Length: 359
Image 1 (cartoon, rainbow, N blue to C red):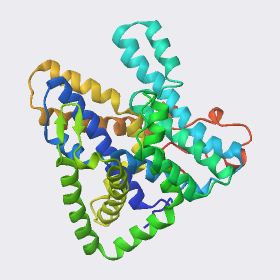
Image 2: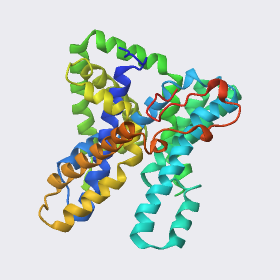
Image 3: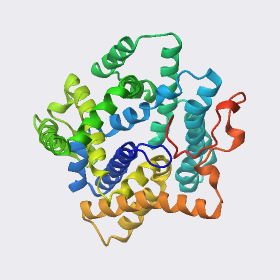
């Protein structure tokens, strides 16, 4: 189903589920590290580890075919500069808040800002890599590389882990295959979701079976839970890991497609529509709320603190966004201004907020 702005509701709902998992991971692992323990959210995130980031990248590639043929300047404006603007802006804000206010060391702030140009900063690496993946996809399209060849190489990079300790290289190898698959196999994904929506009972049963199999593969075979993450069991095996990334991504889409049909799930669609708003700005309220709670010493249960921090980290960016929309102040935080567009992209320009679909 598409809404009034021609958005696919299930895509937004899938983004909503994804951003909840992303914020949950950072919230739970941060609290777990500080309290040196694990809680219930650790196990939820542990189960979702194989598909948590792949799903976000696959969804981001679904609509790439709509713009891939545009002239380079127009394409770069929409799919590369668009993301780099928000990455640069929020990297400055986060480094200023965490390093500048935290240490008062101007030299450290300048050093980290310079390093953030070549080394994706903190949780913003996702935004940085979207620009890089978009550039790579356009180059492959320009040189007429067949989908099967590009996908095969991308899959090989994921299967045979690349570990250079250079984030740009390692994350390209780890996740580009999902972004490219979203682009190359979008029609197939749309057909599968449509089929699931036509037979929701069978789809729900299949999702239930998948959840059990996923849980076994993640938690069996020597898996270990740590305050800062999980060492997966059988799910960590190279080919299995790749397959679970795709299957889990599709499962999130199917789950979203079923959930969005329920009358009280509109909030999930709205959250997904504004998922990048949350992604850009959740880390500051997350860190602040965690520090405040732990300093009081009133709550020391990992699960309870994690849930409170998760709720704060999810809701604070949305409150900020609503205030900006209401007052008109600070729109540049989530909406790219006219000066931040490339010359020559005017014919294709959409002065749309970051919440618009990644065309």
